[in-house]
Figure 1 (spheres, rainbow, N blue to C red):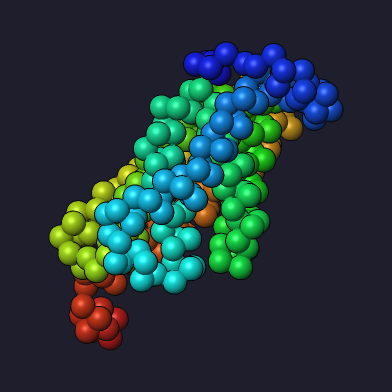
Figure 2: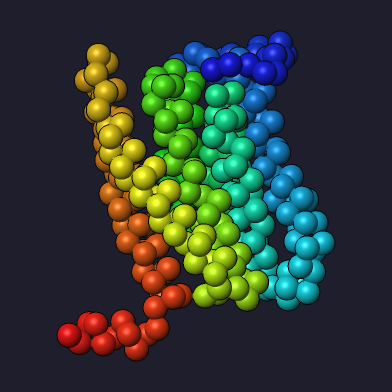
Length: 245
């Protein structure tokens, strides 16, 4: 990984014993970037997102209950990181986001649910341990980050629902972009990158099992996205009539 920010000697020394114990050979030289990313996303969640929401749509945001406000703030974090991470993944910032995601899912388990926690645990462990800091498969790790190309459209879709724009043309155009990018990046691209060679069998197995599981989840999520977009733009009577035929 490249280093736009030189490693801090103190952090290198402090993290070296843990890195040696876990056999994470490159972690001491990137721990400052991981911490910076984690703290930046935490600031967006509790500082920047509420401030922007109260500035742009104060009545709507203040009218949300606590759960919906948290969802709104986490969608802001997700959107910002997705726009930022596809380039910044080259510099190790993805690990900070995955650790932040894990922490939020643990802290707000009743809202996020078991599915989000399992996903966050898998992504943080898989990305931080195996792909970046072991190091193993950095090339594939950067390709994996392309999954995030569909995330901005997913977040826009959610915000359209909350801002009274359900069924509007902007949501329609966004839904088309969401389905296209998700299918292209997560299903086509993700499946294509399942093939890796010239590595120990145990590493290949770990990679393929993880990637296959994610591909299965992606197919399921894509089917749910199609249903969600269809529900907003196809009248219920028309859907029922087609089923009856």
